[in-house]
Image: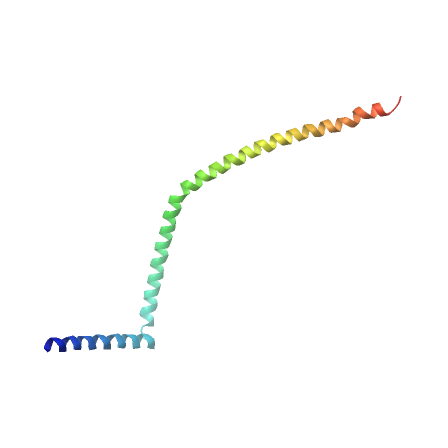
Length: 110
């Protein structure tokens, strides 16, 4: 019987403590401690987040550099191809601009 009573008393005491803390929290009496704890929690979370992002960047940068180098090589090949095409088109333009000088003497009688 004594064990039952002590277990019941423990449960009742715990219930009253929880209800009392809840009432104080709802009344705003823990706002200072709550805001301090929240600030500490947010600061810690920000610090961990910044460290995680730094490590993530450190680990992913090599893959990004390799991809950028591959893309750069591809773009350089395209530039070379386009430069060759420009030279070819410039030659065609110069040939076409010579055509009137060749045709005019033929069309005009002497």
